[in-house]
Length: 369
Image (cartoon, rainbow, N blue to C red):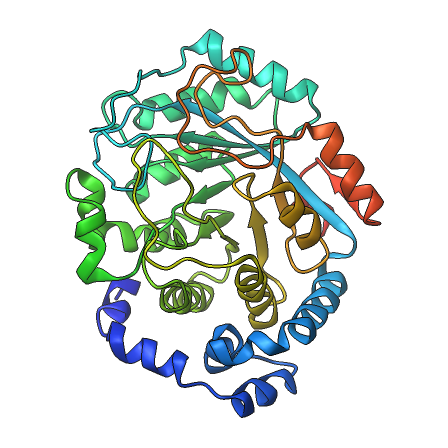
């Protein structure tokens, strides 16, 4: 059994009805609890909960500070390649998008690593398009070997792989793998992924099962907010999280909140989410699971990121470039998506400190042991 078997039994329309039918009484009942279940999560992200945002945010702040203290983990993405063999309606790397393609060579990877290290980072997220021939297992193994002297925490956000591939990468020093389902709407998934290996819904949704069986230290999941109904997708993602915690309890987990951003692909948002609703969603995850790492990228505005620091986010990127070679050679116009918060690391560190929090660059997991 995998999570595919569980999610295949979910009726998208009925699940939506169960969220949108939540009442004020359901929200109040949830907020009186100390331990929250999936029904409480539905209530907390429902329209009925929007008037209670201040109280939800306060409880989220207290639970986050109780577990994580006043620390914010800083990480940075390192884009290795924008080559891709998939067509995805929302991505600037999509195979049908006419942009220059580039995959970093060894000396370029090292050049990027040196710049990032000088910026203070010790936690790096390696990102590529999904192109098995040019950026496959051997490429990732080599990249990890090149980067290990510079970083103690190496994460991957690349194409899904087999369990044995993950085992080999873990042996090389891989710590974390992030794989977003984009949407759990099985009916519409194919619309957004018409061509390439990513079009295989079952293979993608079972990726975390393979990661758990490979005994990865940490795995990440999430949805592309706005692609389909964000409330229904988020409940499916929460179901996935609870399934993984039950069966792969030796691993740690992180959830990210990427909102659909302008890119070369140019897809329209189907389900827009406001800033207040995104805060509501983040805080609902914290109340559902106070052990969970919640992560935020530079997709969001400086104002939003400054205000979310105290409300539940525990891991955040800064000074990001979303194109291969972007740190050594900025403005190449090879980006996957547009970033919103373009402040320097130093500027963002100053914000974190003004909020009364401590920026953490070292291995965050080890610092909390």
